[in-house]
Amino acid sequence: TQLLEQSPQFLSIQEGENLTVYCNSSSVFSSLQWYRQEPGEGPVLLVTVVTGGEVKKLKRLTFQFGDARKDSSLHITAAQTGDTGLYLCAGNSGNTGKLIFGQGTTLQVKP
Amino acid sequence: DTAVSQTPKYLVTQMGNDKSIKCEQNLGHDTMYWYKQDSKKFLKIMFSYNNKELIINETVPNRFSPKSPDKAHLNLHINSLELGDSAVYFCASSQAISSGANVLTFGAGSRLTVL
Image 1 (tube, chains in turn cyan, green):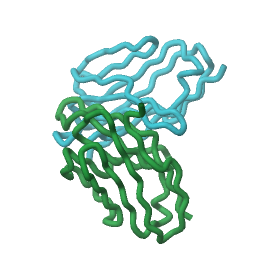
Image 2 (spheres, chains in turn yellow, cyan):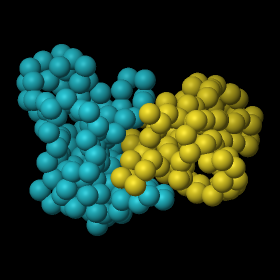
Image 3 (tube, helix red, strand yellow):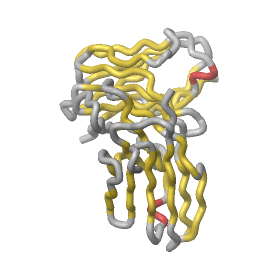
Image 4 (cartoon, helix red, strand yellow):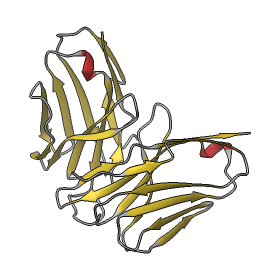
């Protein structure tokens, strides 16, 4: 069974601080995605990484896919209160379109 | 225009009842999904349909029956509801099944509470 483990599960920081969220697996994924979910809403895609070692930037967010395509990280620079939410990593498994999700990281950014 | 819409958003019902959740997407996508998010926020796939054909059925109790009348709709019917069925159910769609990078668009969720 393929599993994705996210850490930390909860993170509470002050505005302006930096943070990193990790997503690890013993399995190889063809691609890995990061989603953000706000209360009462569904997850919304932030980024997809496909190539081992790939780094993508989205304003203050930096995403990295591990060389072996088994892990990924999300780094947020100078966090803002608007970054508060649930961050989910998800890996593409096989050729059925199945996405396997990590347990999520709940981020709270305090003013 | 909502891309993936599901109704109802909230559903409170008694154990043993039967209920349905409806989902529609206007993105022209070929594939639709049902995911269940538990109280710990863990998202787990239940079913997926590609052009009305069942592709994924993840060991879900047969009290859950998905139905796809056309590729824009995927409904979920649940018989004999149990307390453990309480969760948020998300419908999602994607352009096509892809072994590469399958990107999902989610609905806003339907929170089911079984009393």
